[in-house]
Image (cartoon, rainbow, N blue to C red):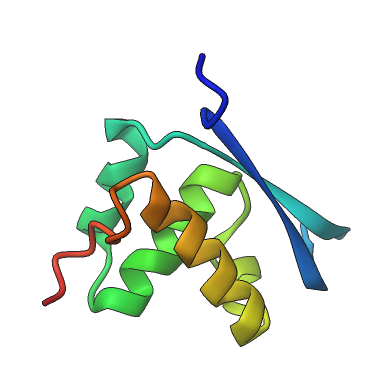
Length: 91
């Protein structure tokens, strides 16, 4: 795997998922199985939430509790896998 196969993002404001405090997310390069999560979502933000959830292996509810600054940083990291644009179908 290349150096950018997994991106590690430190959260400024930790979240809780499955009873565990999470201050770092590891995001692997997206595969089709991750992108399928977009089919279940409506709206660009919900699609981003579901994609981050699938990549980080945390529930969507945990992503929804993420601070806006952290959500933006994680979204930017995910977009980096796609040349800087999230594959949400938005315009």
